[in-house]
Length: 149
Ligand code: DQA
Image 1 (cartoon, rainbow, N blue to C red):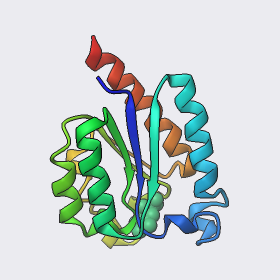
Image 2 (image 1 turned 30 degrees about the vertical axis):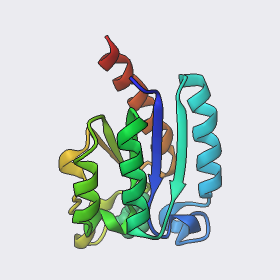
Image 3 (image 1 turned 60 degrees about the vertical axis):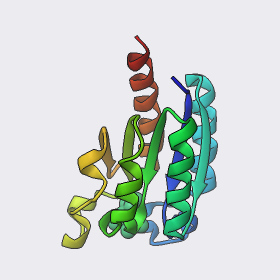
Image 4 (image 1 turned 90 degrees about the vertical axis):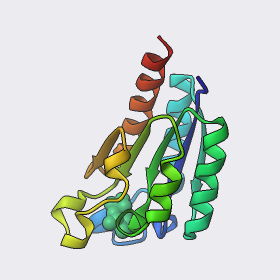
């Protein structure tokens, strides 16, 4: 099983640290990437870390992951609540998917309560801020290790 993990981030997450810090915190996406890279070494994982404001780009990365990766951690941002296309792409991926949200989407506006991704995710992390990403990586490493046995 491939130990390559795709960590995908959707729209507006490039502004992490500057955007509504009361909700999303002061850490930047570069901070998150750095932490994930350090943890990946410890877990013997390779990662590809991406962010895009464009739906098609996220879909293209999922298609790429389909060929080579053993897991995906994805924070689809607002596409979580709107994108059947991202759901369809994720449905072509045969390995574990963890959905990550910085905020607790269930505590927020009603339109954020529904996720197209959750029904097909192995796990969902919401409301742990940037800590959610290392949690997702640890969980994917664990799932890869058990898949192997
Ligand atoms: C988010 C939650 C979404 O509702 C929102 O549109 C985002 C970020 C989160 O990480 O909490 O852009 O996915």
